Picture 1 (tube, rainbow, N blue to C red):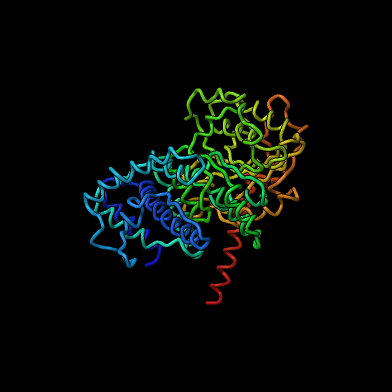
Picture 2 (cartoon, rainbow, N blue to C red):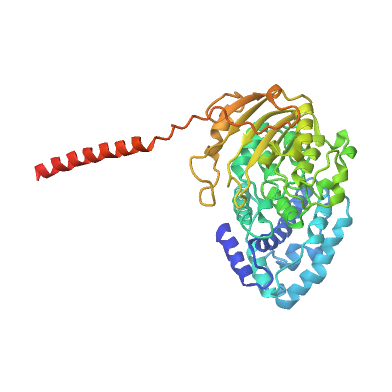
Length: 482
């Protein structure tokens, strides 16, 4: 059975369960089972590797709570022991009353370890599957998914990405999980991360930016040394996410794409006071699409020099302070940032101490389910802004669920990015031409072709009369031939 059919069958099982009622619930339940199955496979691989070196391996998970003990118990010959499988109420009670409390205790382990990640995941999530028979069916199907070969991981990662995309249309703020991948890949490509640089997303959601940065680094550098690969795996990609479900999905997404132990912290980024950010806390590259609105705790405003109730503006300040000197950032934000009066101080700070060199203007419906217009800010730390290159993406169709953003849509932007050429859709402005009081950056495209002037009513009537005469002549010619 294909991986895709396995996922569909699990969805069908969860659809029948009273505890799961949305795409988000399905993703959550599949993810924690996938994670434990992956963890078991990872421990097996590490044990074999240690034995080949003549070393002992200390398991992270105790014997009783390993996947091959409770989920898929094995006989001495390595085959599944069907008689030892728990199901029904026995399985539910084991998962809820024994497995979950055991995994929660890992939160007490050292931070930034796989042990601590386990605790972070299971501290705030719950098993929502109410029927032990449904849970048994799901586990048996999850067990068919393999992580051994690169082809298997690639297929699984593609299916998982599709699931995340579907979550963007689900309830419970599903949109926080998915930024269109063609946009992410374009942002990563333009920022051009290099091996040895650090990449950070403080609002990482499903970790799309970190995954694409990883793909870019590993695919661009085909002949990576073992040292460079280890650097990319362990010392390059960093993220933060406060939502328990998004955190789990982000960790699982990175794992499926090849990052064994993702450096994602489960924390609210806005809790950090910008005055406390030290040089060791800064990064070479920041890629992000932070949430917008005013849903954060009021006291978090005190952590930032420019007070605002707009969450995205707080994140922008955090990212500005978190860049190393010479660091590069690409950030998605609402286009109202360019002109809103409550963003004037922040725009002044950005233009005075950072080089905001590019603004990509996106149309509505770039993000499925979101009606707001967005832009992407590209800036560097350490230089004052002198010139800004604008690019206005004008699609040849109405974007939407059946016609989403694709790779070709932004090809012209990618081609012109380094050239900073002026076209019908792109133009440059000098900072000296910007109002020095409001710092309004909502410049209108000066290169838009002028529309033909509307015709006067008498001109339209004359044209219609002329067409009628031509039609009459053609019709008469046809009749003469009959």
